[in-house]
Length: 473
RNA sequence: GGUCCCGUCGUCCAGGGGCCUAGGACGCCGGCCUUUCAAGCCGGAAACGCCAGUUCGAAUCUGGUCGGGACUGCCA
Image (cartoon, rainbow, N blue to C red; front, side):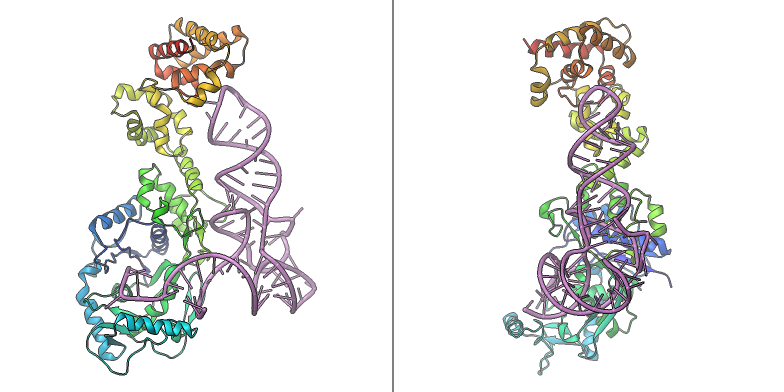
């Protein structure tokens, strides 16, 4: 039997990190088993669904490298993979279930239902306890699924083990709304049946809904899929990862300069591990050893710091050419204009040094603006720490003198000249170099100085040292 | 309130009766390297929620307890 798994995002928002992780695990499982990964759009909530969100979601999945074998945009043998195209099908199923007696119409008003819920709660019972099939049958309103009050509903969850619910604790849930649209429970279950989904790996928040889906599936006369309820993801504050806390949307990570490989790698480590030791690994390695049975049961906290570290690892691992190419838009963004190829070659002189110092792509831009723009203002702390000191004027004058004599402007000559100067002045290397650094980069933190001077060029370097010297009075 | 799920360093993940004086990673602290910052290298602090039981032996099995979470909608 071919493994068929799916991710069924609902386009009521951007792709959430938790959904992305669920998609990732499904994808990994499909690839590991040589099965099929399906992307379906659960847009039964027509009020909140938009095509913009759908595009965002699909774009993020593609960015992560999760390709799908069937689904929206790529098609497949099961017709449309968008639930809004299948409302007729759901209506037929719902009405069919009414005919067989598995479901019933219910026209009781909301406040009446609410009263029943409160009564049940007061008695320490499940809220849906009294919301069962009424004596008097009606032919309009919502359609509710009638929970057979027989034995417990038990199943073996791939990550949780055996789980069981008593039928009296499962409410007669609505499968079809009075406005003629299906609910999530109906549409999702019908689709899983129609599309021959074999394994349903989804967030643990859906565990309590699983008995409903199992009963529905059985009422449809279909085989129940294997379930795997994935642990939830939490934000660093210990609360459920939410949009309000920022960065819950995968697209944000793309914008902030994270690499898809790093995000893929990091996400796969939330609730799973390759071997308990290896942190950095390829997609292929993950595919080779991934199995839903190995997914951990406990919820995980999404740690942006570890992601950032991992992103840095990936940045350092790429070729410098590739890095330069990736980082160019970020550098141009920081500089504020497009750079000519001539200017760009200045960056390339020190790109390797920048690469080592970059965790997030945009950081590279900040490190090298000094190469292209004049120093508008010096970093306050840097100035106070290194420039507002005795002897700095002498150092800058000496440095300018030494550098002005150079006929060859490259790293080796610059270093030689400056070291000779330092020896003459009989001061510490750090003490001598820091004022020069602040003069030409505006900050006490920068890429290595000799290379920076070389890349900046003779004219600008001398000029900046002079300007800084002038500011000291 | 009810149902279900979960409890190993601050965080993520190993360990599933003896190999555990509990391992790896991020972060943190200290050191080395060093022209700053990174990177790299070396070292350190840091956890089996608690109580019983089973057993020669429990982080691992069982029960209870406490804590956390999810769900409880004509959202998904």
